[in-house]
Amino acid sequence: MKVKLLLCPLILILLFTSSFKRESKTTPGQSKVQNLNISFLLDLSDRIDPKKNFDIYQRDLQYIKSVEKAFINHIKKKKVLLLNDQMQVFFDPIPKMPGIDKLSQQLKVNFDKSVNRMNILDVEKNFSEIPSKIYQNAIKSGHYVGSDIWKFFKNNVENYCIKEKHRNILVILTDGYMYHKKSIFLNGGKSSYITPEFIKTKKLTSANYLATIKKNGLGFIPFEYNLKDLEIIVLGINPSEQNPYEEDVIKQYWSDWFKAMKVKKFELQTTGLPSDVEIVINNFIKEKP
Image 1 (cartoon, helix red, strand yellow):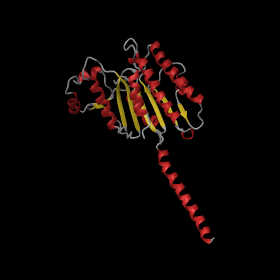
Image 2 (cartoon, rainbow, N blue to C red):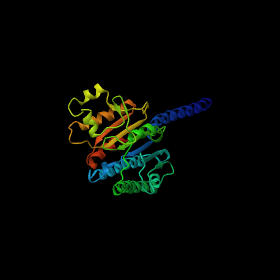
Image 3 (spheres, one colour):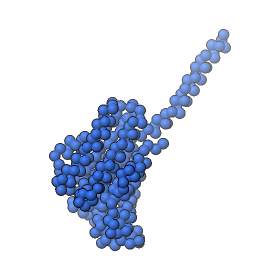
Image 4 (spheres, rainbow, N blue to C red):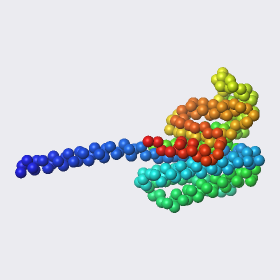
């Protein structure tokens, strides 16, 4: 009897230890669950004018919808108790249209454990309707406020787009050219802008464009940021067809800029059919093991 009594506590200890080990094995897997923080920066310059580019704004809307769908798919795959994900849209400068603050608020999405199916339906509805209203208002008014991407990075990207314990992704919709009348700066060979005229002036129109860039220290003026917690995907790059090396020059400028600011990961995507670009978006956003 004494032997049996001594064995009982020993068996309990072994069972408890075994259970603890099994639990320990599942814990690391749980830490891999990602909390997404997706931000959009929209370029509402005259590039969206149908008279200039007849279908660009429609493509933008489809790209936005593809990102939203990827975000919702991510939400649906997570356990409700683990939800801590968000998505928002930014402009710089802010569009001059009635109710823009309210519309912007409706595009700020936060999912936590209190989420329900209606929240998901609201997001799908808002991202189908509100971006279209904003683009159409800009087109109808003919007043294109432009996009000061350089200043947004200077003043806001760290505060607006990076959140602790999240996978931070910034989606920039632009044609790849960077220019705003209030942000025209030069610092040696570096500039806060790039335009087709600028590219011609700097003689970046031949196969030796890269050597010219390096020789003259050309590129965007970077900031002393360490954006190691930020991933960026640029959608809609639309180079002039007059220069066969225009796309290469644009992508080199953006790549060098992101590398200088230590961006964790980035993708530069030329404008294309939304169905094709959606694959690129999904591959970029989908959760990695």
